[in-house]
Every structure is written in C-alpha cells, then in structure tokens.
Length: 579
Ligand code: GLC
Image 1: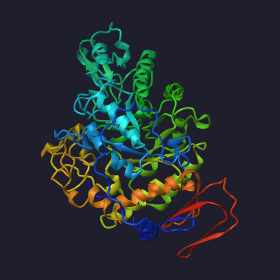
Image 2 (image 1 turned 60 degrees about the horizontal axis):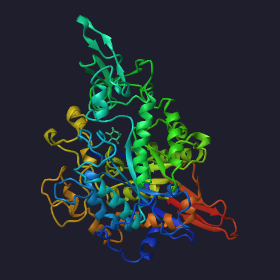
Image 3 (image 1 turned 135 degrees about the horizontal axis):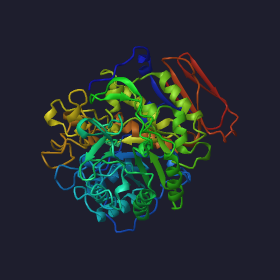
Image 4 (image 1 turned 30 degrees about the vertical axis):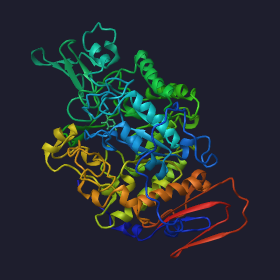
C-alpha cells in the first residue's frame, strides 16, 4: 500500500500542534499538568448479573447533555481482531468484556461492534444468516447480555452493526426465495428475468457491477432468474419495495433494542434501493481495481426512496427511551448529500450519518480540511457531524496521511482534528495507539475475498484488520494465546501496543486519552460553535469553538501563535491551532 503522496506545501502544518484551552493551556503543558500517565487497566471486573440497561449511566451527568450521542466518542470494535478469550485465534464477545476497563480508561462513550451474528463469514460477518443470535465463533446470546450489563457498569453503551441492504445467501429467507418463483418469500429479494442472448442464453438485465467485482447479477437455474447483489455474490440484496422486508428487519432491530442496545450503525445504508426500471448506469471510462468498467452509480446508490425507510426507522427507534442512535455508513459525494440523511431541516432521519469526506482521504492539506469542516458546520441545518478517520475498510490513517517521516506528529493532528471538532467522533480500534496497515505481500496469505479476486491491484482489507496490539507478553501481542491468529499480528507490536503506550505520558495513546478527557470536561469543546479564524493560509489551520450562550466574561484574551494574533471576547472558549 505505501504512504499516501504527501504534498510539499503543508509540511509546515507539522511544525507545531497546539491545543489551547481557556485559560490558554497548550497541550504539551496539559500533558505534563495531568501528571504521570496511569497505566491502562488490562481486565474488567467479573461479570455481573445485572439486567441490561437501556442506556449507560454517565459518569458526569452535566458533562453529558441529554443527547449523549452529539458529543460521543464511539469506538469501533472489529470483533474478530479485538481480543480472543478462548484461544482459537479469533476475537470474541468475552474478549471484549475483558477489555471494558481499558475502554473506560480511554474515555469512550460507546462501542460499535461490527457484525457478530451467525454468518458463513464470506464477508467476515457482513453476510448475516440469522439476525437474532450470536455466531458461535464470537460466543452466545448470554455472553452478549452479560457484555451489555458489564458495559453499563463501565458507563459504555453498545451499538450494533445492522446490515439491512442484504443478507447471506445462506439466510433461510434467501434459501426460500431462491427455491421457486411461487415461494412466499420469492419477492423478498431483487429478481429479474434478465435478457436473452445468443442461443437463448440468459444475460443480466443491465450493466450494473458489484462493488466487490464482476456483474452484480447472479443467475439461479431453479427460478431461471438473476438476483442482484451490490456486494459479494453470497450477499443478495433485499427488495425494500416489499413492505414485508421492512417489517421483518424492523422486528430484528427491535429484538436488540429490547435487550438494551443504544442504537445501530447501518451498514451500506445508501444502497437499500435500486432503480425500479433497472436502467444501465452511465459508463465513466477506464476500469476499476477489479477490472470492471467504472460506472456512475446513480441507479444503485443514494436513491430518494431510501429516505422514507429512514424516517419510519427513526420514528420506531425514537419510541424507545434513552436516546437510541442511528448511525449511517454514508459514503456520499458532498456535504449537501449528507444533509438529506439527517432529514435536512426536519432532522427526522439518522442522528449521525458518517461524514466520510473529512477523514477518509489521504491529503494532509489545511485547505481541504478547512473546507470540509466549514461545510460540515454550515450545510447540515445545524445537525451534528460524525467524523471518522479510520475503519475496517480503509487503510489506516497512519499510512494514508503519513509521509514516512512525520507519521507520529501527523497522527496527533488527525486525533486533534477528530476529537476537538464540533462533532461526534468515531475511533477505530488501534487508531489510538498508531497501529499501521499490514497489507499481505503474497496473494496466498489474503483472507478478504476482494483481495484474492483483485490481486495485485486490489489487495483487500486485511491490512487494517490485523489483531489489536495489547502488549508484548507473547508473539500474539496479548490478543490471543493461539500461535495461529486469523490474521497475523503486525511485527511492530513490540513498540506499538497499549501496555507500553499507556505508561508513556507522551504516547499517542495518552494524547488521545487527554483529548477525550478535555472534550468531556470542557463545555466549549463539547457544545461550542466552530469557526475558522484563518480562511486562506494553505499551511495554517486555526479553528475555534466557543459556547455562544456564555458571554458573561468581559475579559479579553489574546493568543499569540508566531505572527498570528487571535482575539476573543467570549466567556468560555477553546482554540485549536495547527500551524
Ligand atoms: C460495509 C462494511 C464492509 C462490508 C460491506 C458489505 O461497507 O463496512 O466491511 O464488506 O458493507 O456489507
């Protein structure tokens, strides 16, 4: 994969990073002021039998307003790779429970657990065959309930991944659907007769391609029809035009809401509907990494019909106490498109569709960040952005933004942008310690199917999914006791791991922890507005958030940053300067 190309102009961005908090304390001073770093706890207390709460109790009620999700730090857990508790080389729910103490120490408000439901694991859980159970690899429903209860005692909410666009082809619904055209559930998936080619050969109905390679249509002789799949062939798309699908999926969501989960991260949610006329998508030219033509996906992504479902889903989750949250996996083209997923001025769809524009690029450029941040403050009808720099589908930000020389400093910039912006924040396991992308170098080592079919242009997503690096107690970095972990542990675990970084006051881990603590304790950072003080400097980036309501203070403050002078007369304020 290698490092992202690093433009020369923003090098000065690295020269100085400071976080100034009223009364103007720079982060380095803040680091020292906090005293020696307390080591991260390694294990959580024993499970309790307490009933699962609807929402976790907050440690400082005042610091967390009613809408807890607005300023939440949500930590993504990829369960296969977080903590193995039974020595099979694969992470599991009891492993997550063991690490709750660490997550509380770090200061996260909620964890989002990537799919842990029963699954053939073609797409490592994103191909679900039962929406109301736990895959035996990860544990049992009883383990889940215990985890929920334990998380509550650590003031951590649990958000589940919910895959609504498609199921596994092993799901009983699809098995029935594909069995006969007259089956009761035949219409639960997207079927088409297709076209007829030479000698009566069946051909797909249009030019749509799967995001994971090849035609998006798969022929099934038993029904003499094609089914549509946006992702792998083993992930048939559900037909959301059939109201029975919505009823069944909402019921599955209620199953978990009733148990006490705090909400859902909605997988691939912009792809629920496809064009009813199945029109060809415009061809953009050239081919993608899988060798398929590049298409403008206007008929398979972000269709207007999606929004009716979102509004009904929001009405359903709003009936639950405790502010359940709907997070969207929303890869969109521009901020204005994102606004529609909040419901625009009505605010009646998702609370937190992800902004993938700010943090999932690879250009460390002040102007680009400034533009995205400004749009996120001005084009969302006041809704709260949700920023993300890392997840299980993208090369780690360390490698995307790093230049190979200043990587550690750049990782601090990324953390500062993420955690001091007026936004909720998504943090992916390992991001806080600077885990790196470890892309396989031989095709025979690849586990992610897109890396096998796309090799060598597309090497898959294994690199960002390697096991969490806890310590250097064994060759599995404390992740497992099994020498054969499902993906290999990255060799740099001896220096990049939770145990060593928690003991080092200047580590990236403690940088994250302090920023999280700062945003939790400072009302301006939590709730304040955010404006750019500098509008044009390509190498300097300054933002400030302040609490518009607080104007009691008459004192004026002056902050000097080199030749730059910032004046403010507001009461409580925070200034983040990256110059
Ligand atoms: C989402 C998931 C990704 C998965 C895909 C298909 O993008 O994040 O991991 O492969 O959906 O479900």
